[in-house]
Amino acid sequence: MSPTFIFSILLFQLLFAAQPCHRVLTSAADGRWQLLQKSIGVSAMHMQLLRNDRVVMFDRTDFGKSNLSLPNGKCLTNSTNTALPADCTAHSVEYNVLTNEFRALMVQTDVWCSSGAIMPDGNLVQTGGFNNGERRVRVFSPCSTCDWQEIPNRLAAKRWYASNHILPDGRQIIVGGRGQFNYEFIPKTFAANTFNLPFLSETNDRGVENNLYPFVFLNVDGNLFIFANNRAILLDYVNNKVVKTYPTMPGGNPRSYPSTGSAVLLPLKNLKASAIQAEVFVCGGAPKGSYVQALKGNFIGALNTCARMTITDPNPQWVMETMPMARVMSDMILLPNGKVLIINGAGSGSAGWELGRDPVLSPVMYLPDHEIGSRFETQTPTTIPRMYHSAVVLLRDGRVLVGGSNPHAFYNFTGVLFPTELSLEAFSPAYMDAEFNDLRPTIVAPKSMFGIQIRKKLSVQVVITGKVDPNLVSVTMVAPSFTTHSFSMNQRVLDLGNDNVTASGNSTYNIEYTTPRSYNLAPAGFYLLFVVHQDIPSQAIWVKLR
Image 1 (spheres, helix red, strand yellow):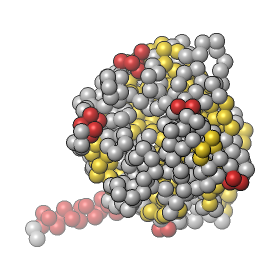
Image 2 (tube, rainbow, N blue to C red):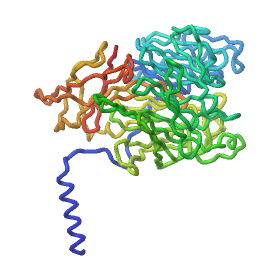
Image 3 (cartoon, rainbow, N blue to C red):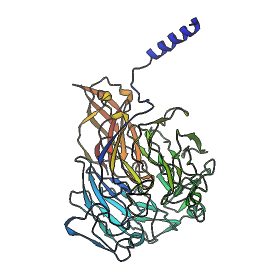
Image 4 (cartoon, rainbow, N blue to C red):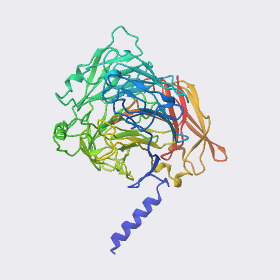
């Protein structure tokens, strides 16, 4: 070896030794899969985590018979159901995360391709669907014996493939849907029922659409960021005014259903700053024309690009990035440590019956704070394809619940490329590995907090058995998402940092933090509160912001 090479090696070792000894999750293949249920009887097309650690899931009522009977001899009679006018099987379940058990629920109208969100009182209020469900509002309360309650004709317009979001005043806004270029609110408080939104007609590709399930995020100024197809606006929904039009995404390819990509509002940080930055991240989708070509049996490769934009900048611009693999119909879930899990989907084709091919089995972890070119890490693959009509949600213990996949017009288990999938899996990110147990915080007090307020100084007590770096301790609040069709509605992560970390003996620490200063940042309602240390999150507690 040359002296120069030996000197370089020594210099590298010295530089490495001088760095703080933090174990950072950088493995190229990480995470573990666990099969929770071989069958829950229905295909989990829609998912929502509730405050009692149960997940409500449902598919549609016109798939035909599911593999789970309704209890006590119940049957649903519906003369408009062309698949099954009298159905004694369930199309919704409640999954108990703590016991790994499930029970049948009864939806009374068709919830296919619907939307929803958790209201400030903790109830799931769910809207729209198909056929007799298109103007319904449904309510599910978190209790061990509760079932769906339905309110007919509560919506002013038919809502099929719409997106919902909780607002700072506690209402839900419902944006778009097939043939609906408008929005409305629930509960109803205004004389006007719907408000026109020309942006949705402008982004509608004739005969294909490519603007359904628009990506809707609450910006830090209280306005709504709305993305459809390949364009985006900032909407003052109170005054029905577009206050900003963003640049078209480079490349011009669609990212909305049926050219389905996915999107997240990246974690909000530095919440005490006078100007808080908000970034949107959009990944995957299908090239223009993919849907029509797939109908003809020609399955075009999906998009392998992502686009990221700081939507609060005076002159915002999309910055393009490249994923390790192309994806259409993927899901994106925000993790409590600020990373983004990209999971599920296909490598070619588009959303729609029988239109996807080449399942993508390996999730990808996106690291928002790394440099461009080093932000994506491929994870351990599953063995179960999750194609069209899959869903995921983050659980309180930090795992990601994965279910669904039914690319067929009915339940179809044999003689097809991708059978209807009734199983449930959990993906455990690498931060759950036992090697990080000494860094992992355990929250010992309080066990929950209901009724906290904005702009308040609070504390949480944790046990951390390893060496603690106070600069790498953060409290995060995570809003649980309603997930369907590759979009996790109402998903939100607030990184509160810490105001002070104090040791109190026996590996116990008191973490002081300040709640968000505005309902524009954190609308009232239920959140998962985690303590994160060196990228390793605790199990969360439930908190209610009022």
